[in-house]
Length: 239
Figure (cartoon, helix red, strand yellow):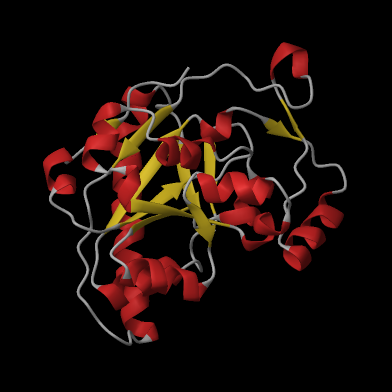
């Protein structure tokens, strides 16, 4: 059940000529990133027009025939550094899921929402280089769509770390059938933009400083909206 998105600062976002949308969590499906790519809501499209934005996707996906063409058609681009710089220099906004395949592998139903974020700082570095704001986006319900089996987890973890591919084993609705999601409310929340200074060559200390500020902003966003989203007992954990 996908609800209408909550947009905290619509007019402030409208005035942003460029930004990086940082979407959490990855979940098994990354439904949240898909929702931002297809601009499923008119108000979301008004404040963050999809035509002025590209979505960063794992490079391995572009090696798969047909899927590559679908990704390019929907405005997705390889998440490599050169591509990121080129898009930002061209004036495009970007959307990214920092947790990536590791977070996808760890996605699990329950009251604890785990984000792989402590050492994911690349998106902050590029925002600083180009002096554009970071916009935190959280999708409540993304992680609640599935349980994941722990079967062969060590092997699947090795595959993810070595090849950059998350082999997921989800099960959920209809008595726990594989691949069938649990019916839960999906609430996308778009936070206020976090403004960053322009620093051509940000140091590790500067990146860490603004990364910490971003994490604080994201956690505050989570706590403000977990109740109305239907998940009052949920807790956020960064790893």
